[in-house]
Length: 509
Image (cartoon, rainbow, N blue to C red; front, top):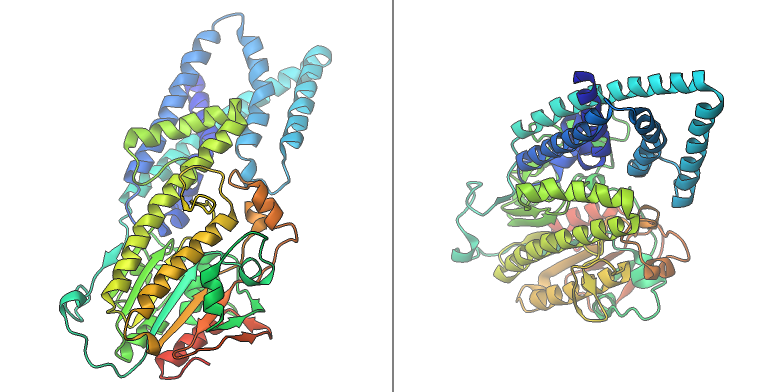
């Protein structure tokens, strides 16, 4: 009985592994991108393994004492491998389309049945091998549970701090601004903003009036060379001026980086970044950002900081969902995957859209609050648009919480927000002294999104010419009134140098 129980719990852990797999090994990549503790998520995952394991045992143990069990084992031998491949296909670096998976399942079933009918000795060995694999799954389950039990001990870094908490000054809203001896800088990052789709080869029917208006009074870089395709590496690179090729996030919230030519990892030093330099020259610094733990790894160099990420985790779980909600959602998603795959895709996509909507509205509220106070001298905004999943319907001109919008819809939302940000900036008497940087961290990664549940027919149409690696970079220099084009190759890392020039009293030209 204990052997059967262990096999059932092992199979349950394998079936659910895509919901909790990123939490194994300390879960450092998950911990880096969530602002709150993961206790509720971990307990929900452990509950799922327990419930599914007990369900499998309740079904298989009674059957194992009947004459039907050999046929049950045959059915398990036929179904289990293809189902596990299907569930974990996103982690397998092979083009496993639905047709390929169906072919694998049919070939495997034919192989097992052939052994049963014509090679009974080999079939018996296959069944013994299956028992051994089941025992291995049990060991995997034990190891997974032990690793998950370690995660609740992690304490997240700060999600927010405000002026005064760093010992520099009192609240900005009630403190008169001191005399300014420097200009102002606003740095806006629209995540996954593609030059090709904004200015290069814009899709027909997509209106971006605010990006077009900004182009007429700014310098547009038309041949920006990317420095990576992952936000977690690119942003610290732009802040420090060094291309980061790899990173880790320790259990004590230390951000370790590896740069070109470096041996091993070193802790990122915030005093070497642009925000520390800004403070040295008397600039008030502020950040509102998504995904990266800005308030943690830049602590001490940002006067007013807020970051958020309420997006769903790998499975259909969310930090703001109830415990039982996070228990039920992965079980429901797994059942849908194995019975109604299209409905499962729609379900996970809609779940992602709704969580992204919550994240975006939270960040937007904080971003516009900082803009309205007009107290920050150096303000950095990192917003999760036009990054998938898409939360805007440009035809209706409203937010959506259903799957079905495209990258073009998200570009329209980025344009809308740019217009509102520009309205606030231009209403300030400091506008004439403001340098504005609008950029993407990387381009639209169609190779990443194609084939995902959120991919639409309009995405396929817009990406028909293939992947263009150029992120958009638009710079409005203080007092600039005419548009200019910079058409020679220009590394995205130059944004760091441009920021430093402005901080040191230059114009950033």
